[in-house]
Image 1 (cartoon, rainbow, N blue to C red):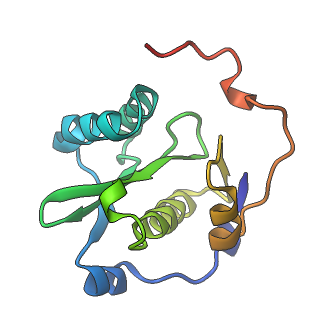
Image 2: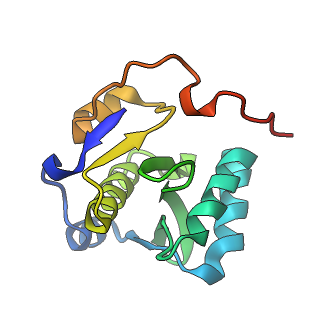
Length: 155
């Protein structure tokens, strides 16, 4: 999917989101790498852990985290699989429905825009309707698996 970063809809500000939910969405820092990577692998996959680790290797770190009372609730990466790609992203099952995924998405896309990107690609987008509705993402016609063609099987 393709997102026009120069044409993002209005969204709740980080301060408003934190005031409403008590959840802070922020850029992760280096010392959190192992904690975040293990959390991602446990809840999602080894592949997503790998991408998360790549996002941590970027400067500034290209991984955002949602945190409440010192507990990790969700994450969003960009520039992990390829430059200009958003994802992977995920929210703990117990806390879905609170708008965490939406806030992570907006803040990651804004970070990409601030870094100089005009567009973001969402590769292997799972919730297509969510991305269409939330940020006006457009589907890109391409055969699957696209950029993931020939990827090694993860064990």
